[in-house]
Image: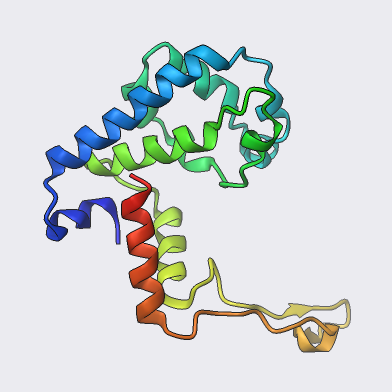
Length: 175
């Protein structure tokens, strides 16, 4: 379920946008007081290593009020939600929360979500994982499964419908 689907739950798009804007404004105010651009958040960012996401620059743009520019940028979708930016920040600023709010705002304003991101979300909703468990092939071209390596089975939601309901409620609360 996306934020766009929330309109069927009784909330209008205008109310959702207003709530997200309120959250961004609150984050903007808090960040202006605390973030001093040390870039420790970026030094630990997994997406920075792979995709050149720079959380400290996202924070700087938010401080300058460039919310629309960030919402229209694909860079907000590269965050891996590892929360290392929050852990590393000496001021406890959380760029990951800014990115969540920006993604919500992008969806609420009708921006297209990147295809691979949508596919991951669909996979999480349907099987409880980003992707299904896979076997690997060794150098002799033999398929090896988790059991062969002595690894425990990957846990999945027992009740898929209940999992989807809980996940949808969490998504609503994160707006």
